[in-house]
Image 1 (tube, rainbow, N blue to C red):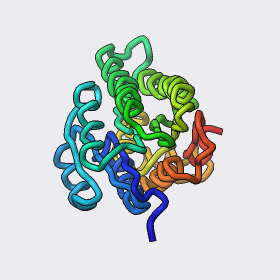
Image 2: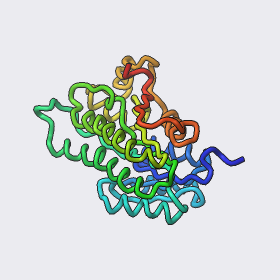
Image 3: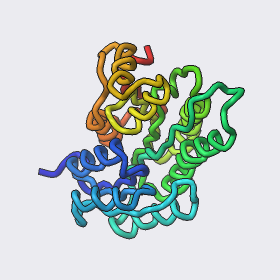
Length: 253
């Protein structure tokens, strides 16, 4: 029986990371075909190989490179016949430091990947996306809140909400929906590195300190975030656009 995303084609940046890979698996399970993009060529090859040539392909490169993003979008159209879903998921964290001490080069890098990278996905994907498609931008719980020491990351994750809201208005006449998701702490290496850096504690202790702040008292799994991506890509969310979807165990409330 065809899945809810049968015949749909998706692009995922940050495809070698845990959320990108889990989203690729979930989208393929729902019937979609996916193009994965990431700087990690080996990680991409592993995920694409797992999914199989019929369902997935991979392109290694930098999401801050406009030509790379444009060519990856074109490859999706050429390989699978169109583009219906784009998940701007690539991201970096930066440093933990007060604003007065924050390294400018680290701030610039975070903004380049998290904001410009998402902008380039919007720019090139929306140009060719079929009517009725879905564009999803991965923000963060700190796109809804913030904390001391994370000015670059929080600024970037707030910025993509403005990008989303602008894109939503521009894409609405074609029935294309644009939303952001806001994961809380996820049980992956990206998050655990953040926690260790932020707290100065060993990994397990740092994770426990973060979980004390989450009403559901645990980290999310990448698969739980992926299910939200599938929902926003699917007909079940057909009247949702311009939304900021918190998937954070209650942390932002």
